[in-house]
Length: 96
Image 1 (cartoon, rainbow, N blue to C red):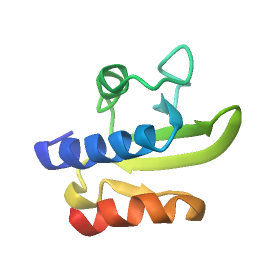
Image 2: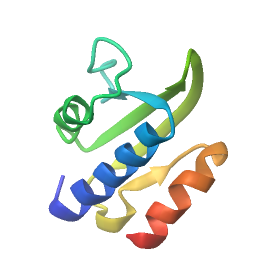
Image 3: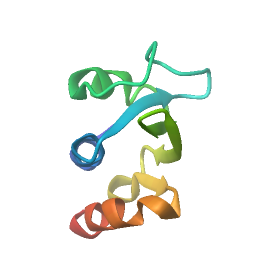
């Protein structure tokens, strides 16, 4: 993950956490963290170890969908996300 991607992903995670989401990271081999987390340092440490990852989201016990990250895309690192999260994610993409 390059500097630009780290800035965008940090903004994404901070925004999601501030809006009550708990997150986990999946790099194709399963969830990286033992449970959904609201710890920014733990989440950032779990990210950026392969070319693609999905941040899985929950609000309370309700799964809210996954956000696909593809590294190497620079400002387009956030490659796909649920339509229900557009209100939170679109401003992050506009600011990138």
